[in-house]
Structures are given as structure tokens and as C-alpha cells.
Amino acid sequence: AQKVTQAQTEISVVEKEDVTLDCVYETRDTTYYLFWYKQPPSGELVFLIRRNSFDEQNEISGRYSWNFQKSTSSFNFTITASQVVDSAVYFCALRYNTDKLIFGTGTRLQVFP
Amino acid sequence: GAGVSQTPSNKVTEKGKYVELRCDPISGHTALYWYRQSLGQGPEFLIYFQGTGAADDSGLPNDRFFAVRPEGSVSTLKIQRTERGDSAVYLCASSLTPWGEGNTEAFFGQGTRLTVV
Image 1: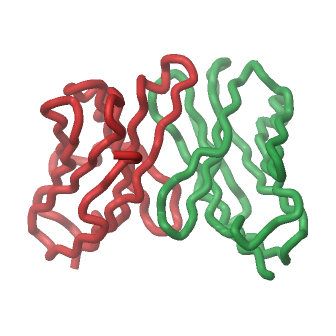
Image 2 (image 1 turned 60 degrees about the horizontal axis):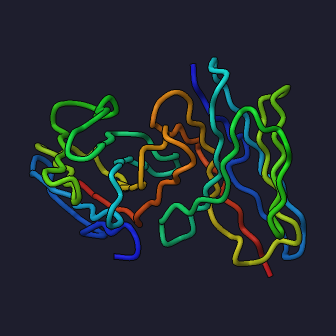
Image 3 (image 1 turned 90 degrees about the vertical axis):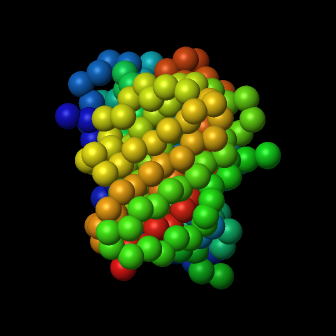
């Protein structure tokens, strides 16, 4: 079965702390894509990153970094020096051999000043 | 427009009524997707259009749900005999080409919050 698990329902941090959002996925396919989206209070899903199953190289984009490990079926997302504007719900998602995205249940991040 | 536009942003309807939700994709985007997001959950796939045709409607929960895209641009999601369980945010996304082709990304609208009372 294809599945995405985000075990952390809600995380609260104080500004400037680092925070890691966990994502574990299940798929039988050897070719697949993993995504992270941000959903601010406005409701729109904002694309953050896509990673294909053949590229395990970690990626850094400013304060954001992603750690993809096929051995543990995980695709974790770290925000360094968090800011209040990072407060949102973050979704991890999986796409395999179809055009559908399977989303996790999301992690609500609250960053307090 | 600059992004995916969904109207109305909010819709309250009585149980048993018929509703239509509209999605205006980004100009030139051939692929269009509808998702449903219930409170506290991630979005769930409903239907995907490539051009005017529904390429995959396997996510529609039952025959009360129907969607069209007659000219390959604007899409309408139609729900008949609404039930309280249909209450959710309905999200639309569009992409230049299907996700399956290359690295095209999908852009989401802000959604329509449907409340069935």
C-alpha cells in the first residue's frame, strides 16, 4: 500500500530554534517522488521541494534542508533558526506511478516570538 | 490570472441541496486536479483532468460527485444531494503538463470551504 505518515501532529518552538518535521512513507514502487508543501492560514498549498527516488542527495535551500533516506523510508524536513512566518501546517506527500499525490496528515508548526 | 482561482471561497448549503464549485486554472495549464481536505487531514485526491477529459476519477467518493471541464480550462465540481459529511475544503490545482511528465509542478488554489448544515 502507498502511505505517508507524519507522526507529529503539532510542534511548538520559540523563534530561532531549529525544528525537524518527520515524514515516513510506504510504497512498493521503485520510482516515486516525494514532496513537501506548506499550508499557511490562507489555505493555499505552497510547494517547497520535490525529490525523486533515485536522488538521495540531501538538499539545502536557505534555512530549509531535507534529509532523504531510502533505507528508513524517511524524508525529513528541517527549518533552521525558525521564524514566526514559518508557522503553518506542513504536508509531506508521495507520488508513484500515477498523477495522484498521497498526502500525510500534516504537522502544525507554531513558532512563538 | 496569476494563480489558480477558486470560487466561492466559502459556501454554506443545506443538506440535500446541489452545489457547484468553480476552479480557474493558470492560463495554459492542461492538467487540473481536484482534492478534498477534511479538518485535520491531508488533501485527498478526487479527480484529474487532462484537457477536457477526466483521465482519472477514481477518487470521487460516490455518484453524487461529478466534475466537468468542457473547454479544457475552467472546471466545475458538482455535488448533488449534499450531506453533512461532504463538509470540507475543496482544493483545485493545475499544472502545465501532467505530473507524470518531467518535473512540472502543480499549483494549488486557496480552496472552497463547503459547509453543509
